[in-house]
Image (cartoon, rainbow over all chains, first blue to last red; front, side):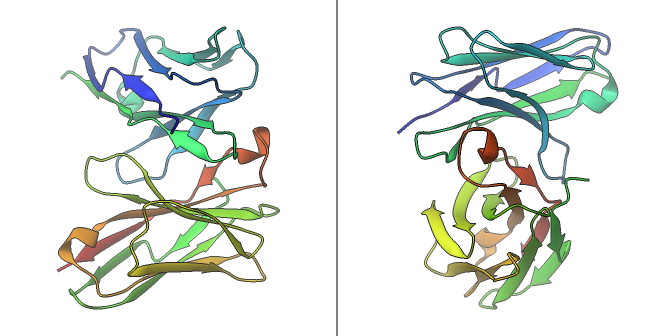
Length: 110
Length: 115
């Protein structure tokens, strides 16, 4: 079945650094979704992408829908402590069931 | 606030017991999804209901069952509980099928602890 591969698995960053993570698949997706999960909370939708090549921002977050439709990228600029959490990518398969990546855990170095 | 509500927030019970988790979807959403998330793990899809009917099944154990009622709220029943069932259980809802409509909105979760 379709799979989404997220990398890196975890990231240790300094406050103020920019962050990049990505999500790739061997299959084509028509929608890419990026979610963030704070510890002990439910995932929250950050950005939804619906068109190949689309670049969408939400504050300090920017996500891109890859032109091959097989990947997506999420960038966070000037990270702050509240950016800590797990970032998931997801996309619907041919039956509109969401396929989820395993997540990228963002940790701020003290 | 996603508009999805889940109760209870926390649940502590013993092995062998049965519990029911409740979810109310966002207003207007017809689909409800249940997920399990064990400590430091990703989201494991359990089951989806759409307008009262089971739509898709994931890695749901036979000891677990769910249903969606006419008012669209859903319940997840977990029986013969084992220590390994301790996890966060999330409910999510979406409008319906279709690429854009498949965007899911999550509730705050129920933390189940089995002792």
